Image 1 (tube, rainbow, N blue to C red):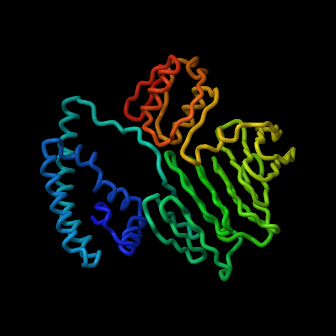
Image 2 (image 1 turned 90 degrees about the vertical axis):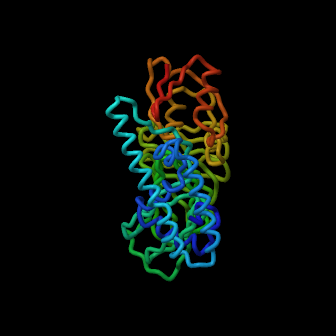
Image 3 (image 1 turned 180 degrees about the vertical axis):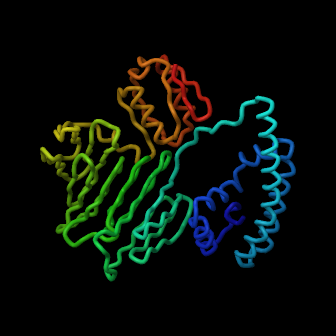
Length: 375
């Protein structure tokens, strides 16, 4: 309850985070406790005043016992909350039964703005769910990770002997993003539907990571160890620089966009070095083409913007789908070829983006739950 009221201490937060990260079920249950939408659906508008009064009473009791241990607080708060939720769940179930019998449509899933979330698979095989509003320390015996706000920090440990096949994997789901600070100081911004795999500790000769999806790398410079990003299509090798890599499996081209420094892009057939302002495209045959680009268009996502320049509507919708996690359907194939140029804040409600696009071009967006139909 203290977490819900923003009155939790750092120590209590760590203990609570340990329980939240024990399972996805714990996290989902916790989020449901302070979801106004859940309560509204569960007990209806008729019970809103009773619910608000209950929250105020719980808050008063929580403040009065602030000095007691968090375990006692959790037990008391749970007792105060679980009964109303059980009652609300029963009412919600009965309401759903009435809707089914009456033929009325049930509530649809809504399109939500994405946020900071990730799943980490440790070298032991254990999976830990991370969220941008938690602080938690994770240790698998070989490495230590500290999650704080929207960043996962890997701590360096030179005293541990690590097997060669020991890896850590970070997965970003649809509608997610995360920042990872590696043990060498390199910072990686991971976009939606991406995966980063790395050894528990880097070797003495190179710093090698594997990427699926999209990421922006700010590599810590080292004279002796090159930093290598390996993908299914090509490798990107540097000593220290900033660049973006896009390597989604369903897309035709692999892209490396250089912002600072120099990088080497190597496929099975070719090797190219690029300079800032250039982009290397690798096709499915391994051929590399280098062009001058506006780098901001390709890496703005890491600072909360999505930029499109004369882009096809289908490509735009594919990008928005990853972030907002919805399904899209087209009334005609011609709609896919409409072109737009936009610079939008990625944390806007998607309805605002659809409204803007309707004003720019003749396209109509119909939203039904988390399905979008273009007409």
